[in-house]
Image 1: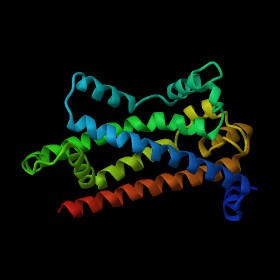
Image 2 (image 1 turned 90 degrees about the vertical axis):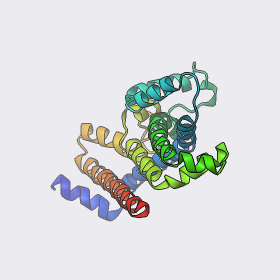
Image 3 (image 1 turned 180 degrees about the vertical axis):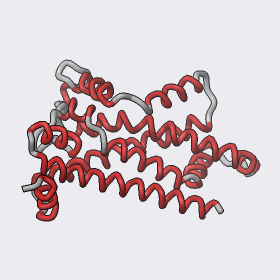
Length: 230
């Protein structure tokens, strides 16, 4: 039977192995993006609105980390979580938690750097009004985050796209263990090498559907932001 036909049969029948891999992938990526958002948005906003020695260097570092190679991030997390590493006693290596940790390392700089640019642009636009109203630092951050919420949601979606398509870091720290740490990207690589093309195609179709959906949401949010601004 043609591999494409077999792949769509797996999708239509709801193959348990395929669904399990998709479920784990979504849980890991969504958890990582949620944590990265909680960390990255405040950091980006604080960098945008404060001036301190070395601020330019911090901005350069965050911008550089946006292109951090996944295998380097995976290696760093592996060393942290390995038995001889500082977090080794926690026993997190080769678990979904380690995979979340690795994706947080990859996604947080993206969210922080793009948030910094967004909030800095908004601060330049509303500086006079907020200063005249004597708005405090905390309220200032909250106000600008709320005003830039559509742009920030788009940034978060970009972070999710990065996390969902990542393979290098999570295969290092997760081990690609069947039924436990195998995600869509790692499974596609493995099943292709094993010759199980239908499952690889099925997972590829699901992954592409998720990527298209995320980009569609980003486009809709961007259009909504334009109408709102207008």
